[in-house]
Length: 176
Image (tube, rainbow, N blue to C red; front, side):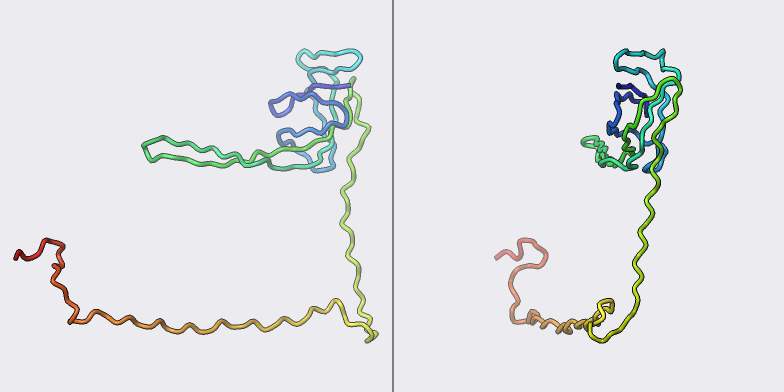
């Protein structure tokens, strides 16, 4: 049995136990959501909606709420030093279709309970003296200080005896 549903401005052909990546819809992971806009229900006999089928719904379980890959919109106008770069990540919802319902039936599959965080084991301090304490952190080593930098040796400047006949202005100089 299959159905065609409409969500997020798009149409999807789904069957039971299909994984589906749709535009973001409200719902926490593990929650069951229903899609009421069913356009076609197929199987042994096909039922077409005008535009939707009354009483038909598709139940799906939310697996994940996420964001897609980054899409970069880069616009450039040549020879005008004009450019614009914008990034965008589209949000999506990953679903698993649980059942296709007709005639106003309610979903039989219920939402899974949220897993409770496992309690951390309680550490008791029993010192026998035989074993070193594993929970005690080793002492941190003293950090070495970097060596002080020596000042750079000064280069000898130009002396008066190394003067040249070249003009400083960049001109041709004296004519001989």
